[in-house]
Amino acid sequence: MLVKVAERRRALVDEFSGYHAAADWIKGNIRGPADRPEPRPLYTLEERHLRRFVRMRGFLAQLGHPERAFAAMHVAGTSGKGSTCAMLAAIGHASGRRTGLHVSPYLQTPLEKLVINDRLMNIGRFVALVERFRAEVARFNATSPEGPLRYGEVWVALTFAAYAAERVDLGIVEVGSGGRWDYTNVLVPDVAVINRIGMDHVRTLGPTIADIAGHKAGIIKPGVPVVVAEQPPEALAVVLAEAEVQAAPVRLAGRDFVWRIIGVGPTGSHFGYEDRDVRWNDLFVPLLGEHQVANAALAVAAARCLRRGPAIGEDAVRQGLASVRFGGRLERMQEAPEVLLDGAHNAQKAEALAGTLHQVRQGRRLVLVLGILASHAPDGIVEVLAPLADAIVCTATKVIGKAARPPEELAALCRGYGAPVETRPGPISATRRAIALAGKDGLVCVTGSLYLVGAARGLWHTEAELLRAAWQDAEDPLPAHLALA
Image (cartoon, rainbow, N blue to C red):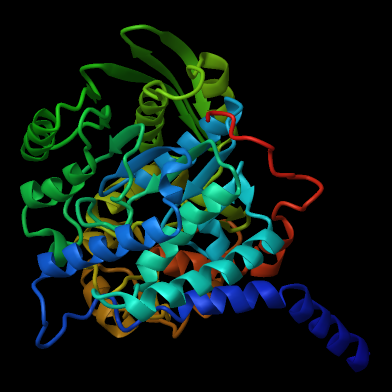
């Protein structure tokens, strides 16, 4: 028996050895904590970002500009941008386009950043691409006057190279942080999208909504349509001013397109969408929460602005929205007790989560698992979510280059709201404890950091299972030509 177990373990390692080597090389480009200020920085924050763009543009030129090989949709915002990206990718795929999806961060495997037509990129092609790519990185770093490429730069350039190699027609690209100075902002997209703007990343984006909006608006390019969600007045003024400077046509939620919620249920939401040209009734999106309807309407409006390829019609929108999946965003993992995973890592996201918990709770005992990165302000999240809980388990996630808030620090904040609070050293033990506290008739919500959510998700879906579901060679042969060339 022991021999058979050892053989199975060796087979598992052998099956994905090339993938793990490639992923480890990518992680090896992390050059220190991403969220700790340098004690004596050589450059101002703006100078550092300008150097980043010099590196990025120089490296992309060396690669032959893969970022120009596909039509792109570039999505920024404080909240909802990941879900909007997932919806856009689903609509693009349903329209017949070969569609790539890049979101940040990933939950369990780096290949979640390289999704092609709703499945992880072919592993063998990923490994071969990384082998060629790392040689290009070494060649660039050897002569770069602006210093070596950083982890985020490597990842974004690799994503663009993968989309070019995979002959993607449409690339959906989520901004990592902010927009103006983000690694992804070397794109000149077909459409720019700005979802809801709120307070987050104030250390790097600024202390006010207007400052943060200035960064989000930085993805607006000359003459490129920009689709904008409903915004606080001070944020909207900044976005519209930038659009005017760039002579970018604006499609604004509530003015140029509207939606109407028909019904919100335990499996998703039905809604109607209308703009100046169409009125579509009873669209369905299976992502939980009323806020996902606003994200869906934004995605529909953005998809209808695509300039390359055939126009997006009702069938593609209806089919795409109905098929969308997005892990870790109010994702239901089990029943008895029901367990939801949601990466609500700022106060705005916590408010959206709280609204959905009110709808789905139905008098049940609610146990929260909470973990937050040190770079995110915990007070607003705790203030919104802790009063809802019957019990709270605080924990921390180990992330390379990013510090987590200690569980006891979070617990001290939570104890002021009345519910019993415990701590556990890691996401798995914290989630198991929460399931026990909830009982079979209760409700568990794992929330805070997306890294926490990704770690907890491993209780139900292992990384190996995800990798086995990636595209196989026979299923996904590369097309001979770009459909939109």
